[in-house]
Length: 318
Image 1 (cartoon, rainbow, N blue to C red):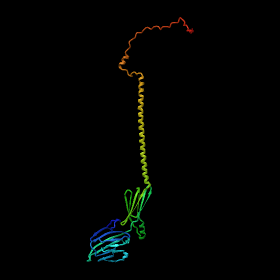
Image 2: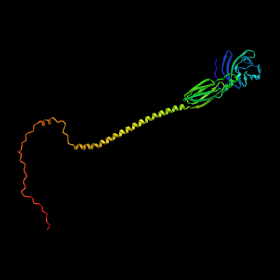
Image 3: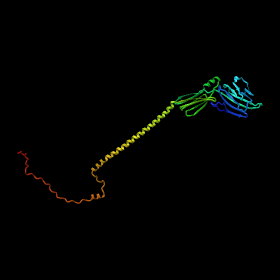
Image 4: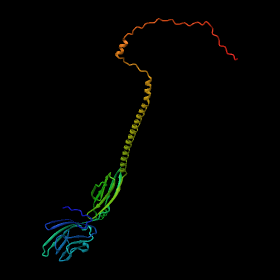
């Protein structure tokens, strides 16, 4: 039968309670050096109750009188009037299976209850470290300082529940003292180390230059594409404006040269039709009537001068 972990914020000790034919089983977790209370769930007054650990009797109450079967100082235990077993300054050696037998005044068995008791160390403060490798991030969450000390003293390792939360919200959980993760996500990482009696957290913002370079490359590429598009649009606008200007200039030039062409056309003689009409052809083919010829008269000859011309003499003044 499995059991569920106890939240460290709760003061309650019982995690799961099962009943089978007058007997019940519960799980209790406590941290080292705390005080544990193993209570009886049977209703009514308790006349007689006897607590055993792994079959060995520890303490008994009968008619409101307590009795110890072991050394009270070594046990660090006591029994209350309601039959509850109290253990002070619990140690990891106190972990085990505890059984209580409850009897009525007539000696009849009233209830039998089992308690599985766990004593754990508080988790150490987790250490969150990160390292950038080849434009990726390597994250390490470690909580093993006290576990190493316990391993030296007790010769055994103690593991915790380590949970690593990535910047995108994804969680990785492992029952160990060390958790490593490699990826590309830069941002805030959270490392939680916990067990059934305690929980501690470490948080760290991690940014690798490789990730920033990736975004920088994307930004530069996007800027280059935008610049090329801008240059193409600018060239297109300039060419379109130049073409429109040439069209306007051509129209103005045509308007200016049109009067001159008209004036030159008026000065030129009319050109004969390139192809005569049938009427013109008949007129050209008809022979002209003969014209009377006049006798040619002799060309008059110049008359000879008979008298010489007198020279002009200068006039004399009176």
